[in-house]
Length: 213
Image (cartoon, rainbow, N blue to C red):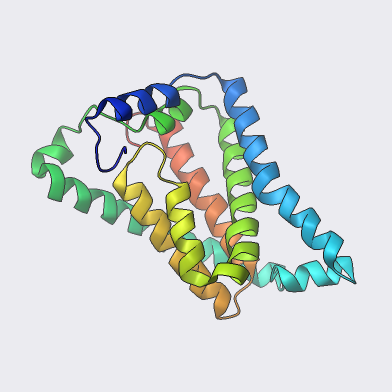
């Protein structure tokens, strides 16, 4: 509705439901999402392996943590460049050059809710919970059942809150890239690290330079 009928009364109602909230609400929602996407799947994998720790490491592809983390740090750079190019390109196509010099005041209400209540501890919490929880669920668990493209589409839809198309497209592309790297044998530690650093960089930018994100 938010993507294909943004001016409808239903879209207005949805945007109204997404708005509001306090820092405490964001903490609760962040932790609830982390438990749903990260903790519960992790406990399920642990409880269903004959050798819990080794079996979980193998099932979720949590091998080579040091190499995986270093790769994740390096992978963060092209991700940030990619999202910048996508955002600028989308703005040019939909609004022209004026869209870059005079940004539209309409914003994603779900994102604005985070930005309005953002603090450094909250930025760290959101980045860690999203990066760890979502990677365990989508690339660690879900990809085994629905494949690279299946989890990528669902990952894109999971980021459709607010109907902001670049966010959906980038999440879809990110899901495809991360899924393909996992299929090629890369460690899930790489995806977790890149995801955490990517989210934290955007949130830190919003704190340091208000109005730029």
